[in-house]
Image 1: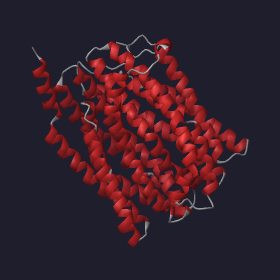
Image 2: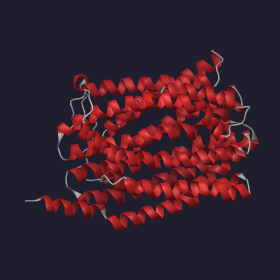
Image 3: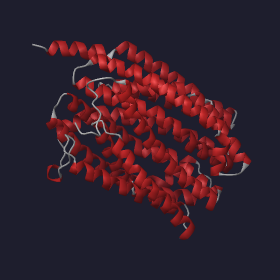
Image 4: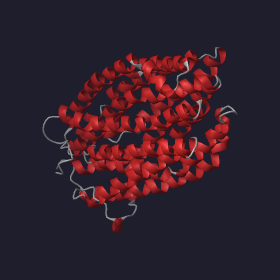
Length: 454
């Protein structure tokens, strides 16, 4: 086994889950730090309108990207399962199929994104004073979608083999370049939102090249051979069967957040700027939370492939406990320094007050989000991704849309927007727990394995 890869099938689990999840969390946190640098540079060297313009794009970009990011989870599960069952032929086919999915999907989103950019921003109710900059940022970002999706799929390939260190190291290099380019484009070349968008695309391109070279040179099962590049129909079917529901689940968050963002936009640019700043802080804790959900998916995927259901069950419990300890420690630190952190983005006291209000409400919902993410990751590891997708569609998307249409409309305050997060996530967490208890995917696969024995 490559020294950068974690042996998920043998030995203790608690330390290996940490070794997998922490680099993954730090990768997300660093990525968000570099994204936050975009907002900070814009906020400090341009103005609050430009800051609001970048922030108002986040839900729409997530909606367009998250479907294919969900499909990358399908690639992760298929490759991890094949590695666990020592099916190197399927691993090879899944790796090459995944890369082509990313390229084709990226081109598709670029074209569709350019077409729907302007009408979607109008639908979101982006104020006229920030609309031109919002549109400019979105068009540049959409042009770089093939690169951004390639990075996500390449990272998924590394994760499926138990390697989260290489994507982390790669991100450190490209992220530093991103910050330097931000400052160069905005301060030296006097660009605005287009400058930070170009910096993002260029830095992602550097990440893609580094990761791709690593996949070509590796001597492990996930090695890429350009001459073998192609789409295998059977493997594609497996990836889509798991990935499409995961993508739909991710999209439900984004679709619901589009509605929420539209409500936020109606409260003016101060609330928009404060919400955008808080989002770039709160998501640090989310990446820690989410990393254990992804760890659960990958560990369960490999051990399910190796027919080790007891290790799958142990993985679930350890992911929940370790996730709670680390995520809530991080939340406590963020809340303690919250107003100082918001000040980095914008010095306006009203912006800071709005941002801190969002932090309080969002973090109150994180216990529910944590349970839902890890439990959903557990089911995805077994290939059961349709159930958490359906639950999210009803519990998150349905609740938030209904809340904004009824409760917020009757009393349009920022607090009345934020309270929907703990309510919707709480309902979803309860439903996901019930689903796991009823389905018992570990017992399901134990019975299936016994039937396959001669």
